[in-house]
Length: 245
Image (cartoon, rainbow, N blue to C red; front, side, top):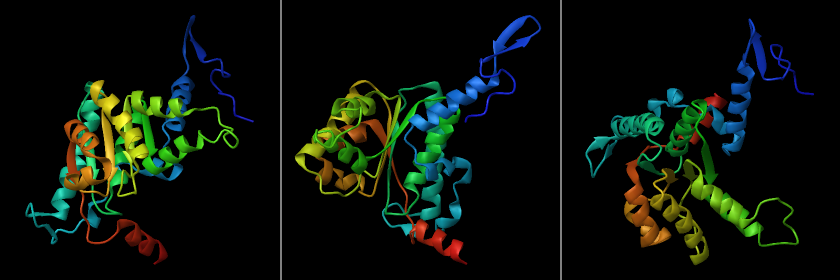
């Protein structure tokens, strides 16, 4: 049984003198609803920009093309994430981010840091793992097994129209023409309606069109500022060792 608010008894109003004003629990309930609707897995609710740790990015390893250390690249990517939060608060049509890098380089952490920061400010965000979304869409075709209340249109239309969409793990999968078309449909709609998107991928921006096709890649690069995180070791593997010590 859910606890009843001690101040308003769940009426949503409290009296101040002879005036009824909204209770603070209303905002808390709204915040809880936002987080539940965001699609962020429980583990990723702890990913905040304030807890982003630069110790995993080597100062003595260089990106050969740019001549910049992994540490400096991480700082630039982190600042881009912070800037996005500020810009989105002022302009819901701000440019998005394309966060690329190898597995375990902190891309998803940074994207979720943005999501959590904006959710706490009352903004609507949807976090989607791309392979999971494609599986969910496919499942709607099986009428014998599909007992859910949503349709393919519901899934795709929500991803198209949500104020901020985060597409996680737009990776080097075996994309079919069908899956490419679904991703294109979402990204193209958001481009045409000036709705920002944040993408994490283990594919370099130069190789994206090999997997997603030229149409989708061109639109992503138009919508997003690219940043590539680099590490000399998988951060998740390092953290597992740290826990076991």
